[in-house]
Image (cartoon, rainbow, N blue to C red; front, side, top):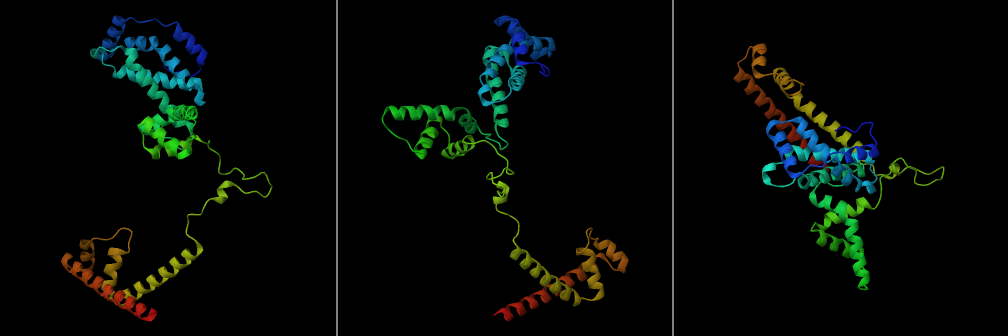
Amino acid sequence: MALDGYTDLRMSRQAMKAEMLDAETELALAYAWRDQRDEQALHRLITAYMRLAISMAAKFRRYGAPMNDLIQEASLGLMKAADKFDPDRGVRFSTYAVWWIKASIQDYVMRNWSMVRTGSTSSQKSLFFNMRRVQARLEREASQRGEALDGHQLRQMIATDLGVPLADVEMMDGRLSGSDFSLNAMQSSDEDGREWIDALEDEGSQAAEIVETRHDAAHLRGWLARALGGLSARERFIVAERKMRDDPRTLESLGEELGLSKERVRQLEAAAFAKMRRALEDQSREVRHFLL
């Protein structure tokens, strides 16, 4: 049931005019949809309970989402409920649909509350919709007892009351305590003020690190060039074709070009690598001796 072009008032008026289903009619429609995929039965079932979906959507208006969007999500939850409802369980469809409608609306509210995902686990969802209410009750009860709770005590009590990890309470408290703002916003109204993004630490390599990396890379290239210089022309060719190309050549293709067997090319490659390893180890020892 798409809501494009509809106002929440118009949808509410339409829903209020829908028929009220008795238990027998509701059951017959549910069977018709489940067993025969009767779309008319599905439409009639959903239309009859749109008033329930709209009523539940209205309870979430305080989270700032447009009512039309809330109704849209509620209708999606209602359709999911109709698709998954099992009439053989002996439960009224309205009772079953309430859970799906509420879950759909809650997921929408949490997705759109912040650019940063507010939560995805069941404990985080419970905190998002219940934390401030529980916090107010605990503070009220503590005040009646003449007690003053600090932030840590209060968060621990919330975690115990809702049966969720303390870490989730601390995370959600931070998420709910402020709204999103742009990193391009100015830190002050002064003309010479800077943007918040300028205060972020640069995670890129610093100048000293870049210089050191380039220096080490240059030394490594020199060592490699000298190691390659100790190979025969044929060995250098095999190493270059096998290890220095974007698409390394196979032993078979090199053997065909050089007039050698695949096994002979493999032996020459292994011998070349052994020579290069010894040359690099010798150069490394020379460097360590110089430093010491």
